[in-house]
Amino acid sequence: MENNSRRNFLKLFATATGVSLIAGPGLVRSAFAQEKKRGAAPAAGAAPAAGGAKELEWPVVVPGKDLALAMAYNHNHAEAGKDAKTDKKTDKGTAWEKRFCNNCSFYKTVGKKKVSIAGKDVEVEVGTCTIFPKALVAAEGICNSWAKKA
Image (cartoon, rainbow, N blue to C red; front, side):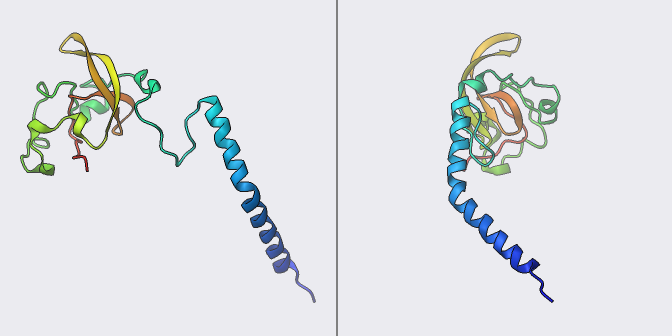
């Protein structure tokens, strides 16, 4: 009584592994070249470049709305109200007065953009924040999720 299923499986596995080792790198290079040619974002696992023109087209976070309300985000640090979560002198080793989006670990500078602050359109430095996906925050802003840069 012959049972070749294990032997056939091992042959098939060895063949598939060999083919993937030989053809794999070429396929990956080809895929990255096509993505680069189209101008698309890199594949998952590759770090996107920060500070591009695409990000400047993103909307600016509106203080007091949705996630910004939950995070107590404000474009202007001076206008932001301190609360129990953010007014701890020893919290994260940095005093409230020295906490801004631009020195937070979640922030990456993108460029300058017009933002409405206190009813006036002002051109300020903006950047991306991992807390607010596909939106920009002001460099001089602040929220409850501030984290010291390493």
